[in-house]
Length: 239
Image (cartoon, rainbow, N blue to C red; front, side, top):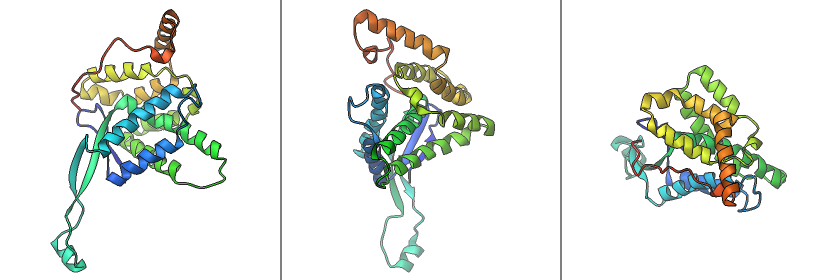
């Protein structure tokens, strides 16, 4: 079963699970996503979800982290069962920056709803449920850190109508990610609920960045998605 935990320095959320857990989630997300170019209003945030899938895939390939965890077996149990087995299970894991993970969790609401509308509920499949289980693991992680009231407020926002993400200027996420990395662990933890609010409500800060993106796109006669922030992510992140 997938599990989400805070990274040591609160830079993000670490996703932990068995190989099959990661493989199922990777497949489920790809199943609920629309095809490339199918809906240009959601193409930018579709790409952010695919970015998460990229990390998920590389974790499956052994390019990320792994650890061995006690599985509860011991010599007495194995003797009773008449088996020979390892007493540890292999877990894969990888981290995702906090603003990014919050956005992906919210964006998946849109794609689940759109997927269920497309198939018109004529058949049953497990893909939405697999994705929902992943979202629940992220919410459980949030609940461990936020006060009860902040958690309730955050859940209320995350349950907002996800159609507000249409034409979302995802460069704002890069802005939030980079600023979040500048903060110390205490400040990061104190601002998690504020991150949820800013990402979903698209307030003044978002609107200012969106305006600059649209002006630059007009100036250079390109798509808004082609405009990039004049900043780069650090090569090393102290998670």
